[in-house]
Amino acid sequence: MARYDRAITVFSPDGHLFQVEYALEAVRKGNAAVGVRGTDIVVLGVEKKSAAKLQDSRSVRKIVNLDDHIALACAGLKADARVLINRARIECQSHRLTVEDPVTVEYITRYIAGLQQKYTQSGGVRPFGLSTLIVGFDPYSGVPSLYQTDPSGTFSAWKANATGRNSNSIREFLEKNYKETSGQETVKLAIRALLEVVESGGKNIEVAVMTKEGLRQLDEAEIDAIAAEIEAEKEATEAAKKAPPKEK
Amino acid sequence: MECVFGLVGNDFAVVAADTSAVHSILVHKSNEDKIMVLDSHKLIAASGESGDRVQFTEYIQKNVALYQFRNGIPLTTAAAANFTRGELATALRKNPYSVNILLAGYDKETGPSLYYIDYIATLHKVDKGAFGYGSYFSLAMMDRHFHSGMTVKEAIDLVDKCIMEIRSRLVVAPPNFVIKIVDKDGAREYAWRESVKDAAVA
Image (cartoon, rainbow over all chains, first blue to last red; front, side):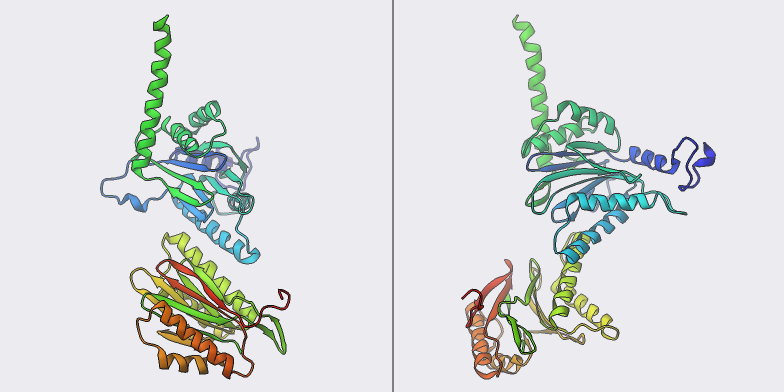
């Protein structure tokens, strides 16, 4: 197989594009990111690796906005992310200029996925080493959406999803615990999912919430408060489980 | 015959523009809004070729928005004015835009400001400015009555005086005007001064 993984433009005999698969490996090593869609809200959460003491943490924003109504979080090579995000932001404005309408979430996802695919079919380049979670509200229908793209250039819509480190465990948790929620309940679900694999506390996760009004980053205190609520609820259910057998 | 003028007050800037869209001897409409809201705290009042006017101001507006997303903070008024001038200058000796612009803005650190940008990429920071035949009258009125640090009421009075002068002294004077204001609370429409309602509405 070693002969078929040097160049992106070469298929292996059993139909693999190894460079793309290696890019997916890079994603699996990136920080965990989770997205959950509610009825009137979409929540993004990203694991924050402990910041170096001297680093100004404000300069490391993991959840960015592409337009007033669209936000993106990613897992993988952050430098590659910068390039994609820049192109996406330009496309959002360009779309507004040519058709006088903001982009739909699906349109900009298709655009980003298209870019990622282009780099799997060109000579002398390598794929982008990141998967993105794109959230937003469609401009006129006001329907919330969550989409995911990956280095191969595929994309699809999700009710909830995770990417990056331990994404399988987070997705399992979401599959077990997902239900249609709204407002604060959706935020709690997203944070609960992320806390499955990340150390608890506002210092270690970045959470942003997209509503019809726009993107809002939650500050550390808010996240800590919700994490505490989640802890309390967990303890309550634990206690409830233990109590009945004793009563019998 | 397009009239655009503006001035800076104590903590706001105001611009007024006529609202007629004219093609040769035909008035297409008399409620055309020529003052675009560039972003939350900037106004761009433009006059000139209507195709160029819309194309150029929309292009500037989208680029200003892009800057904000890329950098997380809005452009200052001075930066936006210089960017606009730069775009006009680059296009000048190839494919010039025939657009005259008054850019009014409010910055938290420096307060209100007004920039005069003409179609051959002249840029001046001014307290009062005007374009078009109406400028002969509005500049004269503003020279007579303007003083720095005017209140909103005083400024609007002066704007009305200018509109009065244009209406009475300019041979094919535009009947309707729109006035927009920008201050610490943002850029917004202040009022219309209509002497002729659009035919369809009547």
